[in-house]
Length: 486
Length: 141
Image (cartoon, rainbow over all chains, first blue to last red; front, side, top):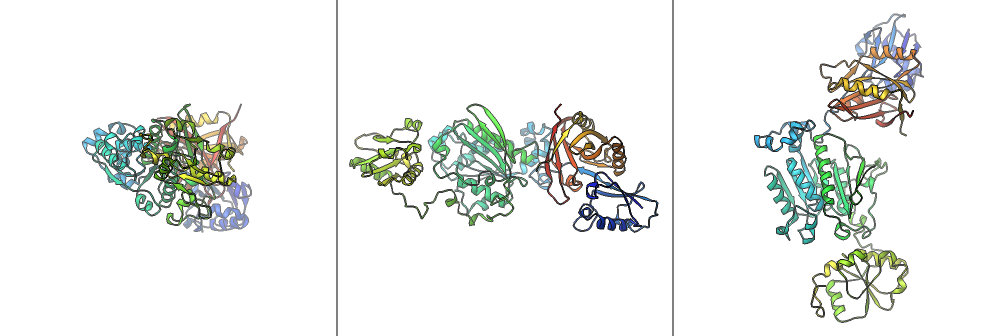
């Protein structure tokens, strides 16, 4: 009997189109094929021994694919055709919101009017707007990025918004954190976030978490939500959010800014890369300043945060292309927008083939992000702002080294300090007197620790001290001889 | 390793044209050529058109048989299949994956409001392997 193998399946049958066999039924033919072409077995049958969905068996133009027809005896002159079944369907639902939750949502007349401009978009429509209302989103950080994300997601109609931030509003926040105003100074950031959301739409279920993200609380905070928007400004929080979100199977829309540049990407979406794939380890503590230290132009977080909100809505509605596996990099100074490919790391300790991180509680984030004083290293001695002020008043002999950058010193000069930027320290250490105490100062007391470690590595032996909390902590100290704020 | 394929002889344009005509139903067809070269596309009937053709497609196995015999006479093989996702992204759906024949090229076209938005290609070596995206380019003339 003749067996014809379709060109689409021939790769697994020694590239032969026409086979001759003595088998007398379809079952016998299939068994014969398995013996003759062992490679074909896994193409013909699935792991349960069922014929694959894409295989069809015809005798002439008669479809004999179903198993109850396999034992019928065939005449020697019949031709059996082994053909492909070609079929498929559109992706059912690209949205991260399950259909049953969408269906449980309804709108009143006011909502139909409020969201009219979404409803008229073919890609959003009633279905999309229902998904937005059904969505439960956690926004980590109510700072500059969070300001844009919170306002747009509230305006778009996200049904449940949780905002996590431990900080209070300070004057310097008002330059870019547009949900907070002068009236909110010294109030918790989550309180002004709540006000703004309630003013936009009282129907939104707003949840405030006035707390710092830690390994102990992160899972409780995000578990059960559909999406996390990372608007934080530090590495510990980013790794914590990434790891917990991966373990709870929640995608993360990540945003970050620095001076004039920003980045947006999506982690943990549909088997895509995670934060650890992109950034396996944080830079040494103190090397990369946060926005509090490095600064950022005022509208930049508005741009980046708006893109984060837009990505979040697309994931919720299930439309368009998005930034999973890609990083959008924005240079606001020279107006360059680039999209870089981001690959999943096979050996990623979190989402790779052999993961070593199986719970956030077992991982030491403080240590990983260099926030702990390593035990084997000689501890760094430091002065509190009060102690240093006292020594200055007493005119104790000491050298004060300001390691800040020139533009930072222009904002606030430290009297009688010599200036050596970190990069030049090792080269210029002969300018320091090892017989005398040397105090290192920077904005927040992190880079000065880096400076001391750098000099120690370079072999400097003199006594070195760090100004704890940096110049920021010294702001409130008044010197009697100056009679003015330092 | 990423597989690479080439659209030759205007085949990309004929494919886009067919997909736009089929909209809002799923259009489907065969990719004919040799090895990594798509020399010609052959539009075929979507058997579920008129029923649930905007979200599904199905090709008669006997049509594939007829078309591959015809292609062979012109010195070409069936090297894969294409179909469209009207108003949806050009990503593999669960159904697409279930029916995916190993070693064949699958092109999915995202089409919206009658316009082609995105053309993406997929491939896998064995039925149990993960589907990987293939690269597809226009042949330089």
